[in-house]
Image (cartoon, rainbow, N blue to C red; front, side, top):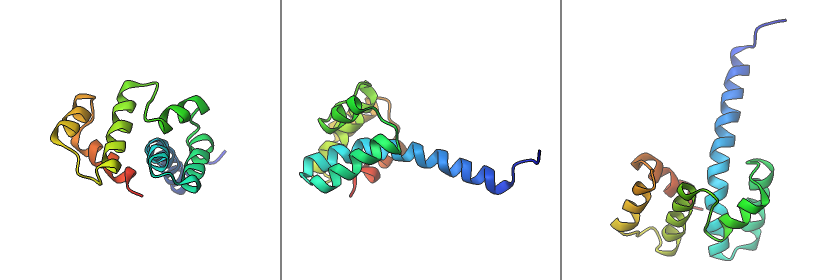
Length: 117
C-alpha cells in the first residue's frame, strides 16, 4: 500500500474546511433567503443544507425561522437576521450579544461575510 500523496491530504483538508464553511453558511443563508422572500435562493440553500452540510430537516426549519436547537448558533442566526434587516447597521448591543453568546470578533466578521448575498 502506498502512502497518501500530498495532494490527497490537501484535497481532504479542503473538503473538510468546505463542509465546515458550508454548514455555517447554509444556516445563515437559509435565514437570509427566508427574510428576503427569495424562493429560489431559499430552495438552493435548503438543498445545500440537507445534502452538502448534512443538516437535519428539523434544524433547517428552525434556522429558516431564525432559531436553532443550539443557543450559540441561534445567537449567530439572530445576528445574521439583524444584519439583513438593518442593512448591515447593527447596534453595539447586538454585536455585544453575539460576543456574549461566545463568538469572537473574527467569528463575528465571518458571520457578516457569510450573511452577505
